[in-house]
Length: 381
Ligand code: SF4
Ligand code: SF4
Image 1 (cartoon, rainbow, N blue to C red):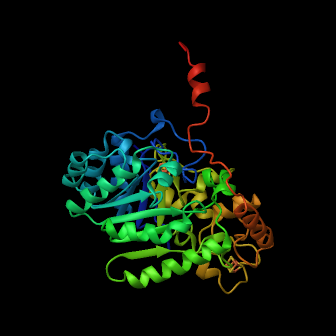
Image 2 (cartoon, rainbow, N blue to C red):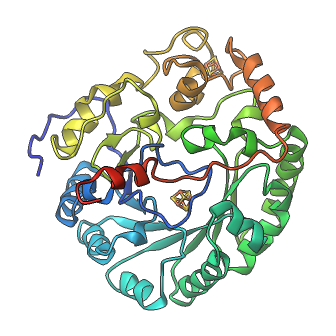
Image 3 (tube, protein in one colour):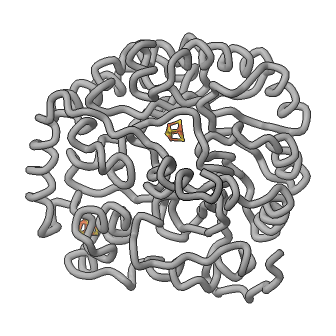
């Protein structure tokens, strides 16, 4: 247990939400998975007691919501204890799940110990394509069942659909499916290109025409379902001219804890090589939030280079996404190349257009790299 408390930093607000990545294990293998290429193994994961301690520290720091994620959080056999700990700490808990490992009795148990909300991911409205994208046969029907249990148990349901070239033409059907499932909210998330998605960019990048049709469909659906189902949709970065205010600012109101216990200002921050992140196994959350060099590196606007430094939009977008800047330029402090004022913007647009013409490029599915070789290298094998 980390006990070093750390003093308050003047002017710094407390975090509101934390992402608890309970495990990287997952039965699906989505080619856009936001987990790092080097996945944590079960033996490295924080224990139940360590997560209980993290939730208590988070609540004391001001956190209100915990998103229980992964990997697939239901792969943890102690999920009931973890949900109960979130409730005991006074945190609102949201289970972010692919659904395929859940049973109705298990979901009932989670609700009994205090689960507040379920966010269910779907890969497509078309069952065969959904199962191809997740590389998991039979998953679609299980997800449909999970959605009905969530509604029967009177929990709010968010449906999350990650969209890309290979499902974007079904967006109207995806929206209709979410409505039939009784979702209160639909999050349409365009793929963010780092980690596994960067490996699969040629297979996933949508065309500009697809994005234009999808944007019109999402706007029309927002009006159609107003008051019944909220729809979140943001134009994908590669086809925008200004970056989004990523994570509402680096280290501003959110942090993620990885399965190994590292604390990140953004769930993809480990893709920035050369940055080191503290662990809850060594430091308290309060110390990390206030003093960790990685958290302070891109807070506010003082770190910005030109053209951001003297730009009128700098307080509005906070310079965009650091992970994307690193993925595309090799420099996490660079202006996000999504911005038309970035020297790299033209190259980015050309890259997007080239990838969008990638036709039927095969998926490189998410998996534990070298698992077979490592097993073979173990004594006794
Ligand atoms: S994106 Fe797909 S592979 Fe990654 S954790 Fe979610 S369901 Fe599993
Ligand atoms: S130059 Fe920087 S601050 Fe200005 S719009 Fe572009 S990313 Fe935002």
